[in-house]
Amino acid sequence: MLTNKTATKQDEQQIIELWDRSVTATHDFLKQEDKNQIREEIPSYFPFLDIHLWYDGGNLLAFSGQNENHLEMLFIDPQFTAKGYGTAILQELITRYGITSVDVNEQNTVAEKFYLKNGFHISARSQTDDQNRPYPILHLSNI
Image (cartoon, rainbow, N blue to C red; front, side, top):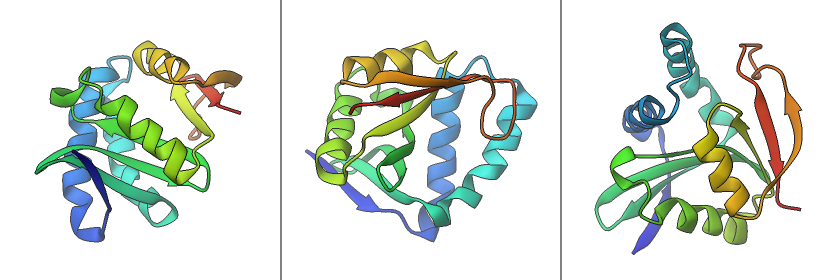
């Protein structure tokens, strides 16, 4: 049964470790130095986001971070991908938490397909990420 809780400062290390496993499995386009830099930046975003840890029983499946109606991050532990959890979490984020937009790396075609399958469409594209790194971003919306 899918449940979630609001993350606290004590959850930070667990979140970073899950992020690392997920990015290693899905973001093979990232240069290692960029991945390391992003990993260091992640905690600085936490005070500005509503972060939830997602569980099935005692298993930590994923974490999400949102700012108002924008999904800033959704990372699923690779051992739980392709089992329907991502869709269940995203639907909960949409219906319960009002998510209407998300950004995704253009090179992460699996994530792009996932969001398109779940009712999002591409509304814009940026040539670089928010830190001006050379990773194009697709801006998606479900409204």
